Image 1 (tube, each protein chain N blue to C red):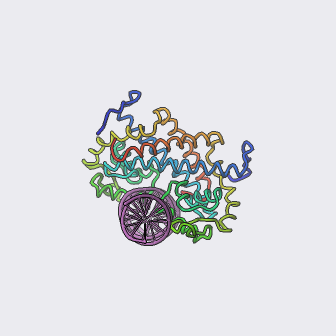
Image 2: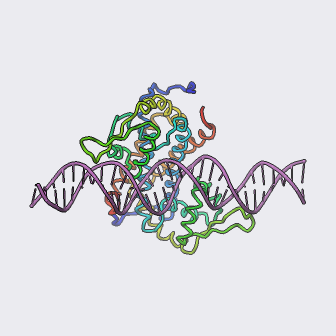
Image 3: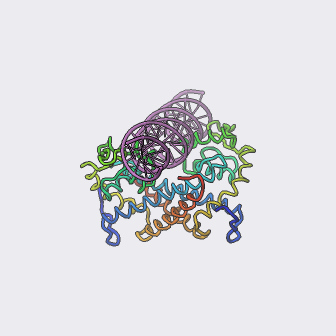
Length: 163
Length: 163
DNA sequence: CACCATTTAGTTGTGCCCAATTGAATTGTG
DNA sequence: CACAATTCAATTGGGCACAACTAAATGGTG
């Protein structure tokens, strides 16, 4: 089971558990704090944070099949299907079966959805000012997080159950 | 304060929206990737990631009222009540109304819950090796995230609609 | 052409997150 | 002491994340 991974830098397993508690809490808390600030700001746009993420992709990419959207956002249909229905109910997107592949569903912005972008332009600056980070620090943090995510995904692939 | 915030370093609002998309995605994705790796590792302990966070606190702090637990974890009773019930159903904790304050519920580890710590000691090292980060990088990231969370909480306090 | 594996969305079930509300216990103040 | 405000846990309801499964369409192979 617990194979021979060397203990780095003489850190004991007890210390590791404490550090683990800290990084778990920090990441979990940061994610939720971020989410919370967005919740407040996005309330006036009438959308949630995950819905905002979808809109960001659509504003950049234009129309997109659900599959592609899921790849960008790393979300599956179990999450996206109901979320997109809510966006459609809100009048921001339309969903249409692709003509050339009936399995696929194209998601595209409505007039209203496109127009929302103008109001959304004011959002990032407000979030940015809340962070007290400068642009370079944000970019740096982004890079570290991407590196972390890539490494974790890599590990998850090789690690069906035990290693 | 939402008064005249200057555009820093000549970053346009369009660029800001793109950067925002990036940092949002990065943080959201990192949080979920982390969650995913833990899900795999914790499956053999029979608990979820948020349940693991609760157990980490209990292993460090011993018995604790729900209120205190919520403060450590920044979670409210709406999240904790059902989660603790599941931990109780799993035989890891007991919940008992405090004798001296009948409003309060004390959460304490069972024998089984205490024993689980031994098996959990192996978890952090496996996660750590998955990150490919060294201990100093982890600590540094933790510090940045804590700083970010503190700043966001600060900003949220000043907004009329939170917590 | 017929058949089967794959691809794609959708559905279901479980768990988490948070806002808002409820109800009971406690505390503070007149 | 009486009673209003506060504290605390639980519940309800809406939304997200993910695993497992279903159903339909597509594509490859014999």
